[in-house]
Length: 139
Length: 379
Image: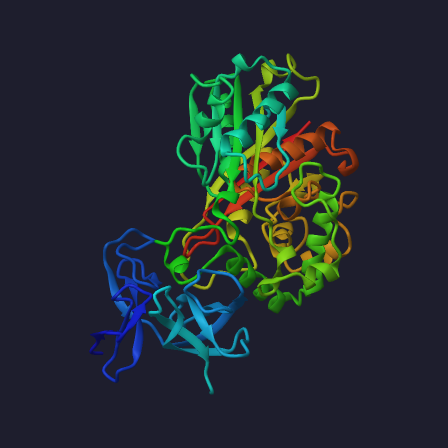
């Protein structure tokens, strides 16, 4: 899959530059890692394998759909996140669990969710803060 | 095992002390422990000081206030397990024969950060995305409620119990009992947690004087012996870890029980890490006080009350006593030692012979928690 770097216009992307990329269809995809030595997969990609210390961690495109493992809705947190902050863990079908902002009025554990980029708050200077989120899909 | 004794304990009441710096929180706790031991302070040969956010050389700054420097002072940071880890270092130093008499301090001044959640490391991926400690524990609670039909009322019962206990503890930050209704109606923080289900921010200090068994009875007729001193760190798991099972505490508990040659049925009183209401319930299970999924029923039946089958957090725990991070581990020991000596007054657990302390700190991506330190004590 051909990828190009995300170039957000007028927003601060709240993630390392290579942790999300656009695929050939222009869809944002999370780029995690996969260790060639022990098979551990993780998001985001680590420079060394946190399981076996191998340097052979390759980029791997993460599935963009998963299952909501748990969540919480917070009234507290850094000022640059809009309140309430909806946070959760999403289990991806490749075995990786991802900590993510969430969208949607009703959040249900064990129901499917899918990923996209969204604005989750604003910095003190008014610049929008953007990152990946998961939300329940219509299927 | 059994070769290290506690001969002195002391602490200051936990709370907000806007006009007192770390030094002036710490030295009164040390002085109280020295007086409790009835020891000439010059006999203290080394000190270990636990503080998570107290800044460089917290131990020397505190001890310098009362003329106790010139000895080896080691400062220990292990998040919420800081002073428990300092205790373990002290225990090991005595067991190794390096010293006979050692001081342990725990001290923290969280009020210097204003209110709000603990400042975690921004470098950490999840922290940069918004992870805060209430969120982490809240997700554990949501999953547990989903898996085991735990109710909000059962969560609130943990706060009710610990606030009731704290009302009997002149060292507790929160001294007023609360009802289930008041707990559930308090300000929402991180669903399902309301304010009264979160430990309060505050300041505090506690101190412990330890000695080798062979000199213990020079000081007290009722030394309390260390039966286990355990420390472990979390294991990395980027996949589907079960958030209703605190794996680091499960491992630490097994190690501590093995070191002591004891099991959950032998524990009369426990001070565990109830940073949030769900935490205490998870730890009942991790320590084997009940089976997985049964903790809600256990607290609802009163089994962990002061007069229950196993008294948990008779001091009021972190929820009522407070949680000045670096001081918590040492303060848990102060409570257990008082319980085992029969000095706990209205909080006294009947026939307390074996006690346990547990402090665990988290906030790292991919881990249950980072550190967990457990101690077991007996008369």
